[in-house]
Image (tube, rainbow, N blue to C red; front, side):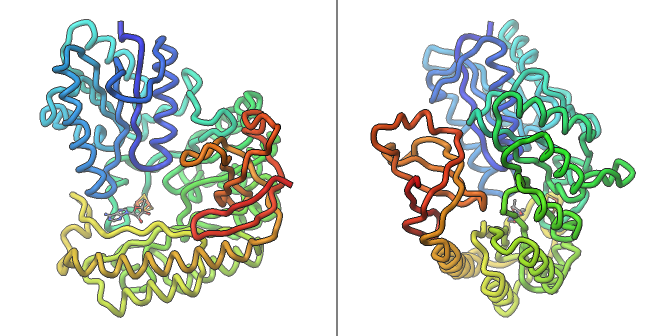
Length: 444
Ligand code: 5AD
Ligand code: SF4
């Protein structure tokens, strides 16, 4: 018996968010119910991330602190999965002995049997960690979605790019594409289940199909999933070197595809891009942006940027600033470089002192804010088609939603209407105010 309640905590990327929904589905299927805090849970599951050092340390801190629950008269089962589980395996269990189950990124279906075993004999278990070639895409039980109207749909796992700073290919393994028919069939099932918006997932969705003799490609996945009649279709993440004209044209000509692209640039200087092994130049990135904007003029563009990569000079950093100015991103996720074990860049000379990186990071963040403000200000007094997600976390009198450009919008719940009935609906919203990171509007 596993008990009655569970708590899942997610760190990191969208792949982990999806895996959390799968874990929740498995635990519900085993008869457990979700609770809002680990203190009330019989089973606690952490889905972890190790892409940067900070996330790694936070996980160790948070899991270590769960020990208090094991001595307070209760004995919840604690399981840790995701990237740290996959990377550290048994080592993780040795370092934190009160972890009952360690599992990896490709074997979620082992979780419940392993928990059952620990519940029976109280011997900690470490799943046999599998390679991406053994990845199990199948949905054995329906996932427990955070929003009933939104679903994640993985189309590939792993990554073949080996950017010099990145640990992902070492942890998640080589890229493996999910069979095309299985993707389309799953999309059909999700649509029939009331899902309005699907987000296709992969470390690099643009290279989908390369391991399937190059056919079908990502553009065909977009077309086929859109043809199921799903209202909104997004995807993450894209590598600029693999973003083809065919994909751009399909995005432009397929109404269901969101007018939004997350296109990580990482840096604005060619020497650093080369040292990062990104396989494109600043000029090539800018050309992709130009093609995108020519095909989809109102496209929302977001990006990832690293500051303080080994050897980065002030002038090279300024190339990043000038690129941000030149593109005019709607949003940028900015990171201070952190060396990751086994990666090429961790052994590079000239690691940048933290104070220098931090100072650059702050200048970049200020510029990103100005850029985001300007892009949003241009939307004032326009009408957007907004998928309403539910009450705002900060202010329940407001509802939040997303435009087709994936911009966050706050809308007052209309008086006399049951706000709950509007959740999951797509409605026209007049934009009445703009900030750097969200819009304000009223239902038309
Ligand atoms: N240090 C800092 N940022 C990193 N990222 C990946 N690896 C590192 C690292 N070692 C960032 C990249 C990537 C995002 C998910 O995390 O910008 O796109
Ligand atoms: Fe990491 Fe580069 Fe692969 Fe993205 S494309 S997961 S940054 S190695």
